[in-house]
Image (cartoon, rainbow, N blue to C red):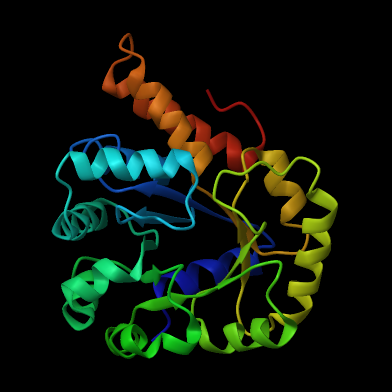
Length: 274
């Protein structure tokens, strides 16, 4: 059966449109606020959403997402909360929803139970940055059995042979990490090298859509980096926005969510959506 994610990316490709994925940490800025934030992302035009599972040692994350995870964990967020949030989101929205996080909490929970509950909650796929393809059977067997996509990542220092292997093993899309660094790192001075890398990956990834993430902060960043990809993913830039909005005591919750929606809309369309 074709997954919700594969269908959506296929529709966008057929329409010659670029996909936009948006990441936010579950339980950030608070567990009560996350469902409203997810709906604002969808209203702003996100083609799919990555819901981050907070973890105490997020290896690939820069400071904004590290802070969001710490804030969520301090608020008592659990894995069950991710499933409940996903189920709530699925009741009102049909765009693909992915869980992104690290393998240790999944192993602690139990991969089979995790995948089953994720699917029952309306999750469409998983991104686990510290799970290499060579060790993925501990999760992929259960994920594929219940119809979850499992997305693998490629980086600038990934060999051609390994990128082709990732393309064979991934489902949904191949996630091209733009830089050998942390999420939220700036792209200034690196664009030419990144574009060359993405051109190389574009020629190697033939079985799946190719999306790029890490460091994208604006529509202009996205426009440049999608010349050789099928779409882009933004996380840290949104997390910074949410952090600032919820620290602004003069705004109502409705105003905050409206600005989140406008930020996402501007990312996608390149025009001021406020």
